[in-house]
Image (tube, rainbow, N blue to C red):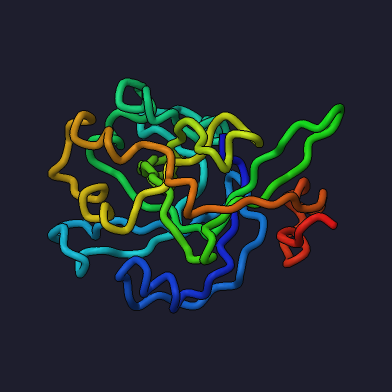
Length: 227
């Protein structure tokens, strides 16, 4: 499960990484939590799969299926298992047609140490931003107001994450962005090779303090290595 992550990189760096432009600047985030807005890259409606067709949007973290009667269901659907998402009623339509890259540059997992859990920040060795494999959906309320929301796909942990947690979010390699976002790819069998643990040698992890335990804390202290 992935329940918190960071987006410290400025918009200019994300624009370069994901070939998306006309992005408004944002404030660095150190402790993004479920139900909050997250930056996601997807193909703009009616555009081709080329880089020029990408757009960055803000989605509510916690997928609300289009058929849901209560949007609160999204609070329980922040993650989807990559192994089963294509078959689950909440995710299968989005898996076929509405895939996105949720932008991050680190995520947290908690390692049990006796009676307590120690948070760890996991990121790329070069600290560059990356894209979680995400699914997005549109829910329309009784008053015809719409909420766009998303979930993160998870897979088995790689060698960096495994000592901390047995699952990790799926991270899509830049060379696979087009394939993941392409709505012309509709069969889960064509995507399965992308839904694997990210290479361990490109990642690193360190223990951080308890500040990150509360979503109310969102400042550089959350990512400070534990002394």
